Image (cartoon, rainbow, N blue to C red; front, side, top):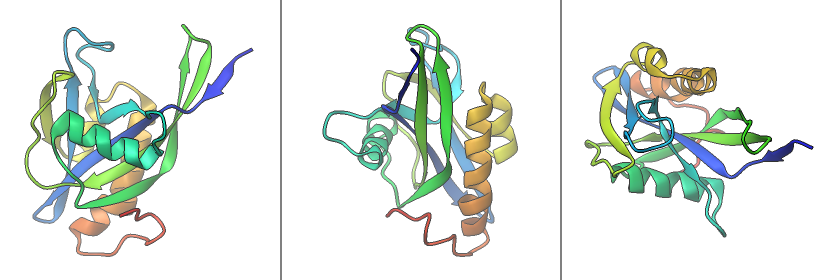
Length: 155
């Protein structure tokens, strides 16, 4: 019987420059699963960690960046893994950051992109959907000096 599991998180880092949000994408290294694919920060929840704690830890490990503010994205990515016959539910977060990333060995490139450019590089519709919601509900609002819904703010 197919299992439903939730052991991973996605975090979409962004910065505001001028009146526009820019989203950070990372390219998977050659020796990695999904080599060459562009993605947001993604990783496993460790024993005793919450999804939020895992997202912040993965951001730090993969980019050495820390969130200025942390946001819940009103979206859960759904992924089917045929090798394990599992449906994975992946909570999504957004992090306003400053500075440039210092990549771990997991990735071989990074790019700051507009929402349209980022959506074009993503392989999976789940990634495009999560980014579109983050952009609409948080990124664009902050870039226009607005206040996103306090119900989405985590820290």
